[in-house]
Structure formats: structure tokens, C-alpha cells
Image (cartoon, rainbow, N blue to C red):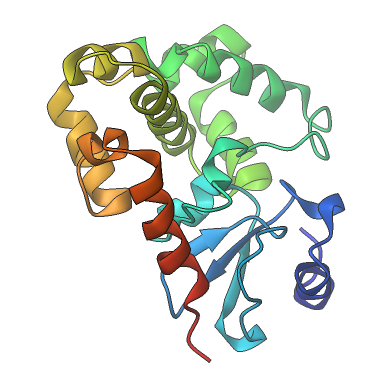
Length: 201
């Protein structure tokens, strides 16, 4: 990642060139955003930058409900710098870690699981499992917002081993169950606006 000052300057001007390259976490709100988020720019002392959505979530931050940073957790800016990581991401997005473990994924890539984990740490500051969890939640949110499928069916299609696991993941990340994401976009948008624009000075 670039240095803090360069990232903060990009945040101040909402530079689209770094959208997806860095993710902005705000200590005072516990929320992370994309650098192009329209929310008020927080003071530098309250900001932490992460190279991926998964890394911010691992650190305990919740996704902003306005700019939805978890919907674009990977960026072409670094894709291709490590072919192995790019291939691993494609397999994870296709559900490889929904069915098998990291060792099986590493074997498909022709490397050891420790080496795979090191590559993910270098590029995303997150483990393959955390990346897979971020993608499962992203899939589930899309299904919740765009379909009338039952919660158990959404859990299955999103890659969760059970509805209970999906409920636990949403509760950990958002502090509320997945069912609340299908009760009306207007109410959710009001919550998002309130949640994301209040930044402690």
C-alpha cells in the first residue's frame, strides 16, 4: 500500500484512482468505506487504511451501508502481480472454500497452504478464509435484496454451511440478522445515511 499521507490526500479529494486499492476505516465510528464515499471526511487521527475489505472486517470494522465497500473487495490495480493469488481469488469466488478447506485450495494451485496464506497476507492482509467469508456475505446480501428466496435457501446459495452460520456472520459484521436487509430499501437507506455521516471530530 501507499503511505498514509498519500492515502489520506486521496481520501480528501475522493480520488477514484484509489477506489478498491485502499479501504478507509474510521476508529470513532467502527465503519470502513471506499475512499470515494460521499460521507464527511474524518480527521486523519481517526483513520486507518487497509488493502482489502476482508482486512478491515478482520480488524472489527463494519461496512458502510452507503458506499458498500464489501461489494468490490478486490482491485485490478494489483491483479496480475501475483498470478497465484489471482487464480486463488477466482476459485474462492466460484465457491472453492465453501466446499473444501484451504489445504485443498492450495493443492489445486500447486502450492502449500502456508505459502498461499502468506501470499494473501502480502496482498490483502487477510486470510483466504476471511476473504471467502466476505464474499459469502456479499452474495447473501445480493440475494436478500434482489430475491424473495427463503433464508435457508439464501444461506445455501451464498455458500454458508447453515442458516445459523449465516445469521452469526451477519450479526458479527452488522450487529443485526440478515432478515433486516430485506425489509425495504428506504428504511435501510435512512439507516445508512445516519450511520455513515456521523463522524466524531
